[in-house]
Image (cartoon, rainbow, N blue to C red; front, side, top):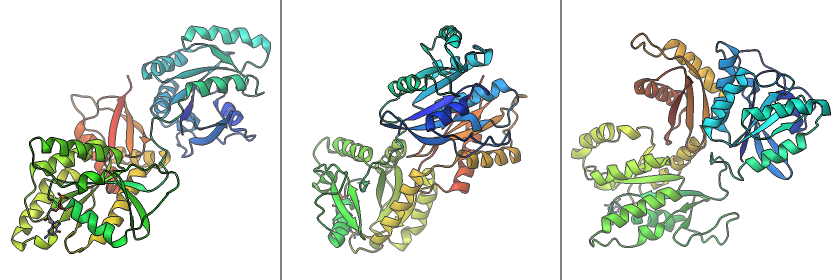
Length: 432
Ligand code: GDP
């Protein structure tokens, strides 16, 4: 669902407005200052459109100064939202803090709807008109308290909100989509045949799915999966000129269509450059990943130390991916593929609640502060998960955060929350 975030400095009436939009009577219970509350988003509806309403009121974490607080809040909201409802107190007018937020909103390029709140009667409309000066377009005069003007405001917000969230949260209905990729002769079609032959069912219509003729529905232990672009797998590989190029395009297309990729490797032979390229393709795509070592029946014990070195060294970058050893020829361990797929997909879908994330980060940063460099040390303020599929995190800091420290945070995130089988990304926003 598209996300609409309500942003504004304290006391402009955000909570009242949020309650009004949600049709709730009771006041939002404000948490203790410095405590983040988990629940920041609510399902909402207006004029038949459903969206997610994000209430930034609870994100006031322990940073010095109200200006900083509001600015951080707005940045988080911007990271999360498809459109922003910016609330200003019309009785007070635009303050320096408001203007700082406006600057940030403008830089973000996100659509903004300006709410001139606390216009309780016609007399207040003149106050609202002053807010044109913010340069955010028409100020919508509203009384969150009495409900006056909220209809027009929400109509405008719905216009600003895209139909579909850019965060790709909504998981498409129907079976999960799997790309089986690997270099020629690694055993893709053998594996597919093995799996499909064992438990094949012809499924006519699966609700909510559109069928692409090159995709194949394969039911494994009662659970259907789309194996995407199987036509490419089943077609015999020609070794004509340029075949490599087309194979690689097809791999890219399959990965693109899939939610999870199984990269098939040959256990009996050294890892090749092509294997590595395919792996990078998957990692760069942000899809979930499962590694499968095929031809295990041909794996000579003499090779084992080399294989182990390969896993440690060459596959070190994807150490987070579940690994299964199989033999497509004999069917050995092919049943282990599905649990690995499910683990990777679950990780890919994971969302860490803001409260838990910041509790984790707070402890981590307290125990292991960012190293001091040239007399400077950025303060890590807080973090939010900006998206799932795959999980992407945004950390807010007061200065440049070293790559090494970012990797340290990623490592600890994985240790704490798992994420087996999914890439995760961490970006840092520096607030000036
Ligand atoms: P693709 O190009 O990746 O689809 O690979 P194929 O499935 O066509 O397999 C290439 C060759 O490897 C064929 O001769 C298969 O019979 C053989 N093969 C595939 N998997 C295994 C396996 O697990 N063990 C053994 N011994 N041979 C395999």
